[in-house]
Structure formats: C-alpha cells, structure tokens
Image 1: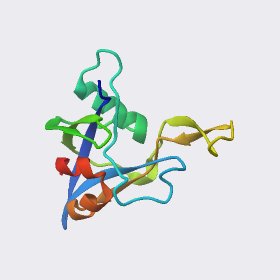
Image 2 (image 1 turned 90 degrees about the vertical axis):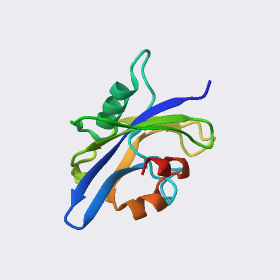
Image 3 (image 1 turned 135 degrees about the horizontal axis):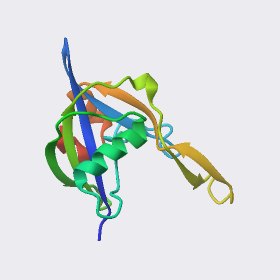
Length: 144
C-alpha cells in the first residue's frame, strides 16, 4: 500500500494579493534545489489518526508553531513515487524567521557509516501562487 501524508496549505491575503506558505526540505539532498522541491508542511499519520489531526500535528512538528482555524479539504493527489497526499487549506499567518523543525537522521556522506541529523524543514517562504507553481513538487501544484 502506498505511503500516505496529510498536510496544510496555509494562506494569507497581503495588500498586493494572495500568498501561500511553502517549506523547503532539509538535509543534504535538497540543499541546492528549490524549484520543484518545495512542499506544503505534511507527514504520515500515526496509527488511527485522522487526516485533519495528522495535518495539524505535522504542521506544528515541521514549523514549530501550531496553526489555528477551520480546515478546508483540498482533496488528495498521488505523487510520482506513489505517495498519497491529503491536503487542507487554512487562512493564517506564520513568521518564517521562526521555523523550528523536528530532526531526522540519515547516513551522510553516503556509504560513510556516519549518521547525521538534519531539520526536516530548513526554511519556509511566503509565495504568490505563480511563484508556488514553480517551487512546489509537481503533483502538489494541484492544491493551489
């Protein structure tokens, strides 16, 4: 069965238009990639956790602050590798200078036998929908 993730597309209305919050994955693989690499904050459900609860928990784990508000379902997409992503939109604000992400460990450099810790999200950015269409993973562009 394909992996499932649930996430939140946070948006706000600025004086000059709509902005959406994107995250950039941490770790060495994504270090020099932005276009087509960014995502909405998302992650896998724990046990019998519902999609909404997963999305809220993952937002807080990846960015360090909870999001409040009524979640609007955006549907489900399937990414290239088969992962299913359920997304929800909510209006709100977030200070991108305050990202405090959880960590993950991976072997780095490859085949070195050394495990290093990296933030799951190394930065977040407010983007216009046009900017987001370039930066988001291709499958997640549907959520815009």
